[in-house]
Image (tube, rainbow, N blue to C red):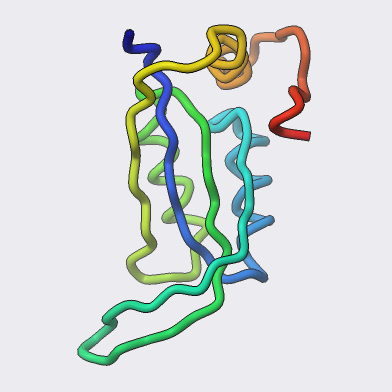
Length: 118
């Protein structure tokens, strides 16, 4: 089963994460974004870096990835933000349909706030 839905992971500074999440949901590039506080350790410009960040878990349609990526990069303060898309191989059909419906720009749909995305 390939529902055409993906999960996109993106980390951002805590002060920017909610703004970025709201932007992509308002533009209908994502149906839902969950935010989680995380600690990140990574190499940047030859130095080992440690940052407190927020992980954005973004649910969207695969065909929206180019537009979503452009929006994330445009709103993001990092020079090279993490933007990684993971395929969904299955899941609750109603939830996946909700993601698809909510990301169809200009179309109205049913329930706006499923339990997973208040």
